[in-house]
Amino acid sequence: MPGFSSNYLPFRAQHIILRCIQRHLETQFFQFIVRWLPSESIKVGWKCAESVELHRIFNFLAKYQGNIQDRRFHLAWKAIQRWRCVITNIRHAAVHRIEKGRDTLLRMNHIAIKLVRCIAGFEMSHSLRGLQKVLHKKISSLDQLNTRLRRNLDQQLLLCDTCPKDHEKRLKLLPEAANRLQQSHEDIFIAEVSNYIGTEFESS
Image 1: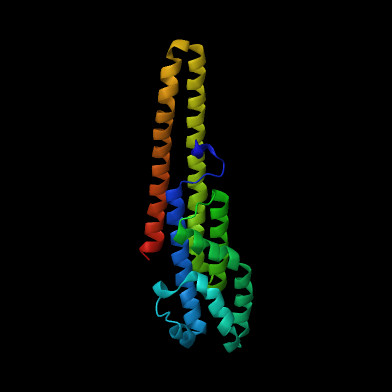
Image 2: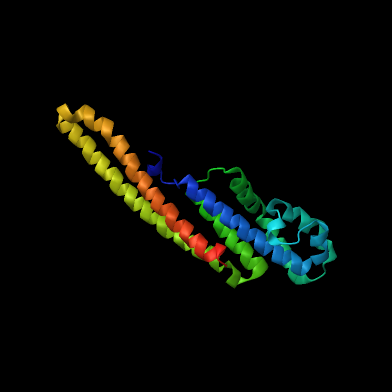
């Protein structure tokens, strides 16, 4: 069963999380660009956060960074470039619904936190930092539930060996029951993550 993999994360949850991170980064980047390159942002049609395209931001900044002499901008730009690959992968995975393991997803959010702190300040990374804590907590809970499910499944399989006459029936019913329980665990995980995102991001 896929839920027993140590790096597994429900795909529906992954997509919700990646889209959330993408939108938050685009919002923070828009504020950063408006502060430093207001006329240039209008020139490319970025008049609101929703019009910003995450994968185009790096080329935009590279093109116009010479227009700014302020050392603070160039320190930020130097840091931003280090995270380019991960940030563009966030957008790519979110838009194209590419499945990621939990370790990759957590690393993506970790880099997103660092980027937001760099361009917008520590306080503006609050929601992403909270998301990271929620994910660690909910992943731990999901693992505990799946561990119990696996243990119960092993016990039922052992009963199949000790009660041969019920063997065929049990083997037929066990996968269905296990899948239903796992799906229930995943639904709870997705609902709790979605609730946090709805409260911390979409309502702000």
